[in-house]
Every structure is written in C-alpha cells, then in structure tokens.
Image (cartoon, rainbow, N blue to C red; front, top):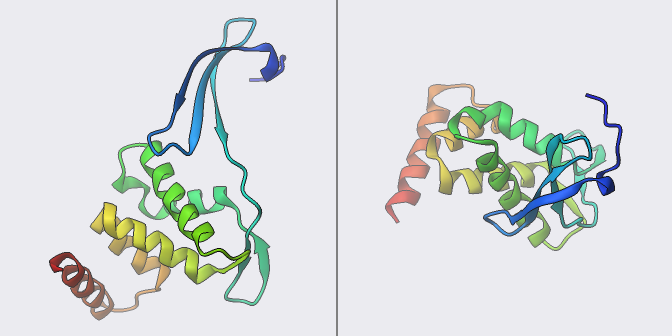
Length: 151
C-alpha cells in the first residue's frame, strides 16, 4: 500500500510505553481513516562489529532480530517476546562501554539472555552459534545449563 500522507498528518489515537520501557508504541490514524502503528526508540551511537573474518561492519539491530527469529523464533509466542530478547542483548552490548564489539560477544549476549528465558531456545541457538558437530556438543551444553540451574 502506497502511503499518500505524512506521519505528521496522522493523529495519535493511543500511546503506550513497552513493558521494558525502551520504546513508545503509538497507534495512529491517517486522514483517510487507515490505522497504523509507529514505534519510537532512543537512538544510540553506532557500534562497530568485529567479524570473525576480520571485517568490520556497523551493528544492525534488524540483522540481529532476523537471526534470532530465524534460529529460535518458534520458541516464542509473539514478536514482542523476540523484541524483548533483542532489547536485552542490545543493553548488554552497550553496557560493555565500548564502541566496538566482537561478533562472538553478540552471540554470547544472546545466549545469556536465552538461558534465562527459554532453555530450549538457548540450546538451539548455541548449536548454531557454536557450530555443534556431535551429540557430545549437545550433551556438554546441556550439562553446563543444568549446573547453572542447580546453583
């Protein structure tokens, strides 16, 4: 659908802060009666990702979202739950206080968040991120997760 108006021409019907307080969701209506939703998020300074190959690229939140959704999205009930995972990962990355992060740090941050939220998604993501080759790899990650849970 082609947008024939500016967002500024629409009227806000409802505004809500997301559960984690990181975004504002606004329900809007265009002059011709179409309803749509916009999200406002605080823009952070860019992070540079240092890839395993040695290349550098600007951190792309949407790329992270798609990777998490593709690998473990079926373990969550809604897009909002996935977005909450991404928010926690991004907070952890910015919490490092650096303007460059290794791609492995991103993967570890995802694992840390998933370990707290959904153990099956954690194991699934770990199998992809750590490139499991054998059943022993699965057994090892399961053993470590059970030890963490026991503490």
